[in-house]
Image 1 (cartoon, rainbow, N blue to C red):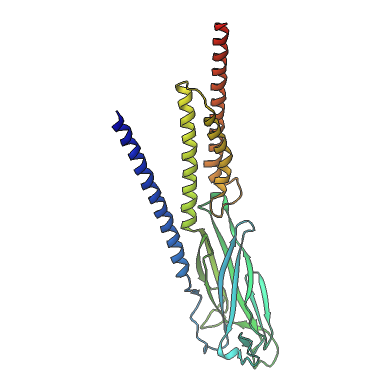
Image 2: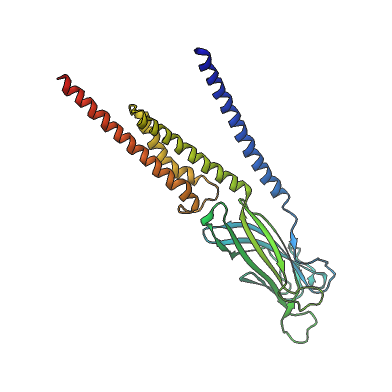
Length: 311
């Protein structure tokens, strides 16, 4: 009779070790995939080819550096580089390019002015995005970003601003998100190059975020179902309710919200994943505590009845 018990114990140990190894391997693969993606995320998507000798124009190198779900915005950092025709010699050796003409650049909903001979400094700005986080972690957003510029040509007889052709190079997948960039043209005043760049950003949760969110949701349900199985066993077989039973279920009831908030980049409580996992889990755990309370009252009544019969 001892051998089957040892066999079950050995099987449980082997299953636990294999499960732990599988969990560590899965998390490592997901993390490695995310790191490799970030390392290979240095090749920008461009709106047109860039050649410094193609007349008056500029190229804007932009990188998405952050996604703020709470404020529904995407943060960008960008640098401006002029072509040879609008490049000014940097006599001050400031480390930045300068232009020989005044440039007004509109990036999304923000406008930046660069005076003639002033350094083209690195800039940051934020753009609004449209979407809803209710379907976390399978939610998504869309961001529309126009980029265009005007300038006064160097040999212009009158200081009238005209369109300056812009090439937009954009890259970046902020931590926890995947961004797809789609270019199209708004304005074709220039016969060779579109003077404006217009890009649509499709923002989705990364595979790493989805994987961890699904894992935590599954863990929540496993813990809740274990408590339900324990309460059902005590109810069906009319077993005695011990303090560890109540302590386990009570601690799990208060731990569920914290476990849910451990999901990466999780929005405020109230999204679909909460209705699927958190609300049902807390409801079932509360029902388990009611079962314990009912069983405890039944046991207390039976004990009092035995005591009265003995007296």
